[in-house]
Length: 268
Image 1 (cartoon, rainbow, N blue to C red):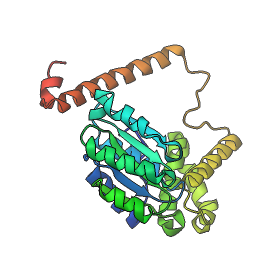
Image 2 (image 1 turned 180 degrees about the vertical axis):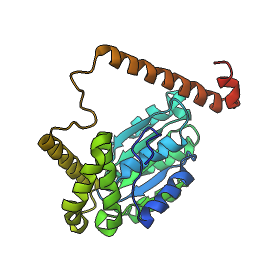
Image 3 (image 1 turned 45 degrees about the vertical axis):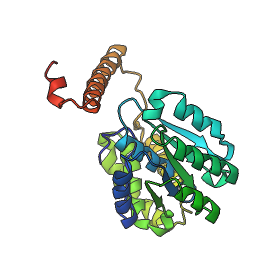
Image 4 (image 1 turned 90 degrees about the vertical axis):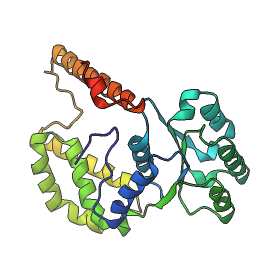
């Protein structure tokens, strides 16, 4: 499992997940709007994060807005008032089903008028858009659209998602034993349970399992700081992280400017 990017990986063995990886790569470099559809908790926000992380330039940001309270002025402020945000970044608009038709008309007009000056807009729908909204979306020339199905329609993803969650929660020395116990005692029930499409519910259930087993056997989980860790050791770790970040940012800035990687790294 790779955690080399800034967000959690998309995990799964289903055909849907295979197609989703390809979709993320296809739309990540486009600044055109993206449409994501699926029930609450199936992972639309995670997909938005992956699209942003895969195709963004250094310094750009990912922001979240709620369609239920969206005001067109927010997009104007983000898109036109700040030159940096005009060139880079993404905005995920959840609850897009709750955006009024009037607001959709304004968004469509705004996107077509200010194309190239806006962050990438990613719309998250719980249900398929209405015919009226589809007409307006088609006028925006979408980069692409993808529908995420519930977990109960892709049960082959439950095991790898659970394994990833245990791996991310456990220390290296505890992972294998904790996973084998989970696989034998808990996973069979999880594979037949109706998750109602909620991946977040599965992640939370596995996290609670890790917390329960850690409490029972006296082990620690990732993120828990041992009181014996010295301030000197922590300071050393932060300094190393800072140096790596500076190197990465310098490298990404040079790539954005069109320089060869060696021209930046050679002076260090």
